[in-house]
Length: 439
Image 1 (cartoon, rainbow, N blue to C red):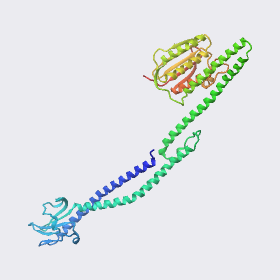
Image 2: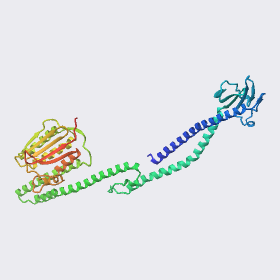
Image 3: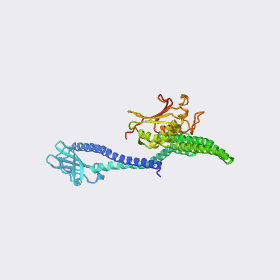
């Protein structure tokens, strides 16, 4: 596992080391230029000083550096006739040059800087090897590098302490989260944390908020499911007891019919609960595929025909052309199946149920209308609650059908509108899909 502190330390210390080396190189070039300017001035000053001296005969200075303050220089004075009047270092090998002023000259394997002056009939040449200047610049740069090396441990310690202080905010956050129980999903306060950690804190808070919604939803679901299943299971237990105590065939038959009806209702509730758990919008997002609502409606209507015929209800479908949406075909089939099943249950015998699929430029719609009694406007929102059933309604149901429809619609970013059907007079449910798939 990689340590952020170690990575920061290595990165910062490596960068500082590179900066120190680069600084030493930069100092070398700066000092070299300044030394060159200084020595050029000395060359020129020395040349003018010797030009002012009267030299009639050949003079040769000692070639030992310790005896001559200008030992790093080669000083020559030539007459107009080309006679050497003075020379500070006879072994230098410098000859009379034709150039005047400053110029560079190579003698053997070394480059020299030369200043030449014509004055009072004499030619004065003052030269210096560039190695002298480079040696001084290197020495100065090395001294600076030594200073940097002495300061490096101090800087490393300061960086270590600074990085440690910066990491303490993360450590406090980790300790705060570590002390929490699995039920404590309150948001982390980002105000006391560095700005750089804010995106991480916001992501953690968002994750905990979603987990809290899921846990709350599951707790509510489990509690509601247990409550809803308790009634039919208790009824089944009582009916089983009555069946065991029945004294004649007629009473036994009546109890058996009631027991079978109770079993049917219990199985229906269990299936709806399973579907609802699978379609919970906080658990997962639907698989995105291109679904033809018209083809889907035809398939669902085929499965609902036997139920409708048993109740004497006419099913009508209007789906003229392919209408594509993005989503899960299985989930949308459950949505439409529940809407049609709900319409059949609440429509009196001999009634009608219409399913219409409409597609235009920017919206796709499924409309399910029936000729039943309808739903008062004040109950339009309540009928989507889990286990809600209208008072006085004798239709077999679990109160989960429209709750499942609502969840599936939410997962597909679709809106649901409840209206009174103008053609059939009963309830009309319109599901509108804003997104479109051209696949």
